[in-house]
Length: 174
Image (tube, rainbow, N blue to C red):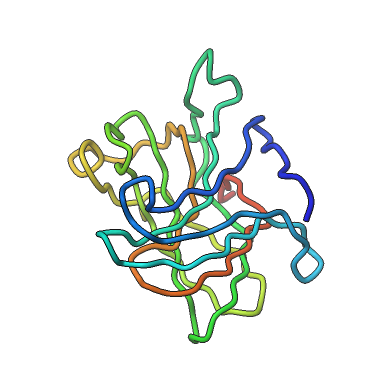
């Protein structure tokens, strides 16, 4: 493995599990080469025990959090990821969670789900209007792409996870 790179915004990726909320899921995050691509690889076991059920890789997006903790992505149409997973199903589902000023609590976010086929790299595009609010704040506030944090999450289903993310960015349809 190699050290985690900083994102273009200068922050590092981190691994987070439901243990922060009393769950028992476990996971690790490493930097590896997967089928010739450098990627952050999330491995672990999602457990629904103790009201748990997630593992994720997340990063803060601000260029200078001391000056402004948010990034204005409103000139873009959504978020794009290059992802790869392992699994026994025909397709595996994951979420992207975004946090903006409306996210009052640790578990508040705007969420969109994507599905990919195991064993091959895929480019996934999620439009801003595909994100739905969850938790205090977002559940009653329309989504605005003024963003603080982005997470790629395995959530809500007990299973083994191997998820690689080779690229994350914003995209614009021309």
